[in-house]
Length: 412
Image 1: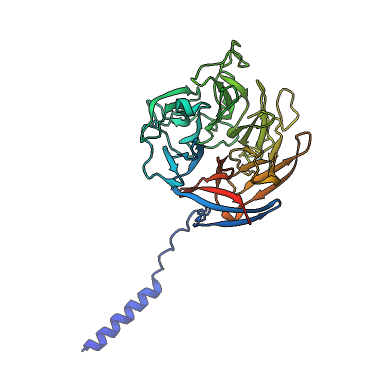
Image 2 (image 1 turned 60 degrees about the vertical axis):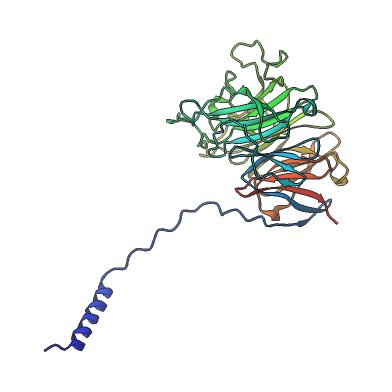
């Protein structure tokens, strides 16, 4: 007769034997490797030592979703674009919690979305602003392109008189994507989208290659071009290709990959541009009317699939960059410093980058770069735009999901 105690012991033994003979469940798969999560910014302030003195960095505003660009208003307030498609205003150092209404529908996929903002040179009188953005297709949103809208803003809650003054002939992105060379990336990248007005009031627009570099050397489209327009979107008759068969008349220069910086030098008035290369080969160029800057045939970087470029430098008919980097530093916007707050930087080029630093470049008497310094890397933030405020201090944006506008002052 089996007692209750004996039955219990037998059941325990059987369970133990089963546990020893049954294979254990396999462990869960390891997570896929990827970039580390971005470092939290913190509240600051931060102090940095540089070759030309100390810097003191403070937060102006936080809680912005990938802030892309800053435009200072005459009273010192600032407009800020968020890549997700919102336009924000910072008044007296305080971020308005409500976005400005009336902005266009934006295709905010990948690194596409709302890009640069620029004030009309006569903004104080006409209140006109310009915004570059990724415009969705009417049938398939993914069949998008770069556009620039103009609107009137009187300082209130909404824009008025909103209209597109430029829509690039660079529609692209709907499936099935065409076969492309060189291991190029997704169609949701490389829009360009930087804006600059010159002294005469002409508007310059950077249009990226959309990771379809085969289209760039074709002058009948706007892939990988810099565009020059009147402030109303009209085409100046002294553009270099007006009336030339097979060329779009709005084109100023050809052969760009993803131009994300654009500025006029305050002394020479030359137009300078920064752009992404492939694996290495990020560039800064001096932009000259009608010139070809080489992409996709000429680059000092390597294509993503290891394919060699057709040329690297000194290629007849192609312009070489004045600065280039390998490995890539992922350049942001450009700024030439001619202020008084940082006297050691006078005449220097400043460029925030997405590899977490502000680059400072010095030049010799002939305008050739002779030295570089990378600053503020301890912030560990992707840095996108840089502007000087009416107070003479510098302001940068952190291109992060929880992004910010930061102020740079001289340290003590």
